Length: 143
Ligand SMILES: [Fe+2]
Image 1: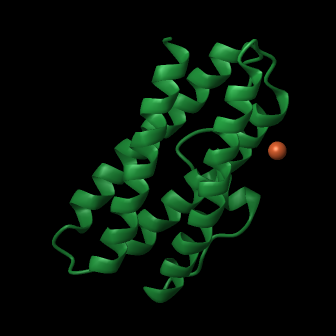
Image 2 (image 1 turned 90 degrees about the vertical axis):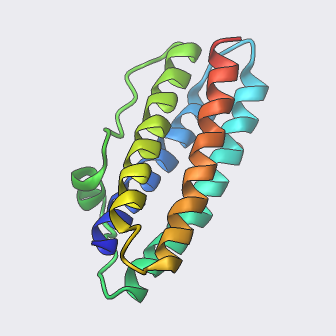
């Protein structure tokens, strides 16, 4: 069960890495620099997390998904970004990070009796990150 929860988290994190880059590069906004730097902080964190999550999958006996096709299949949202307006781009990121939080809460409750404490530690840390990003994005979009 840990492998499934971690694999979904890996796919969601990889897709969010791409989407954060998309906004970092393509946003046009009076708040460009703030959004550019905020999304840079997000993709740097996601990049580090991806390796930790994939290595945890190996430690619990799974094969880490590592193709775009597999990430698309497992992720809870699309890598497409149809929004072009700054606030819509941030709303898109907000809904993705919110979806990761929901998946993580579900995964943590599923694994809570498993005794796989190290995986639960990874999931807890990732939930803290994504909840922080939800707060940051809400504070930016709804300012
Ligand atoms: Fe950059």
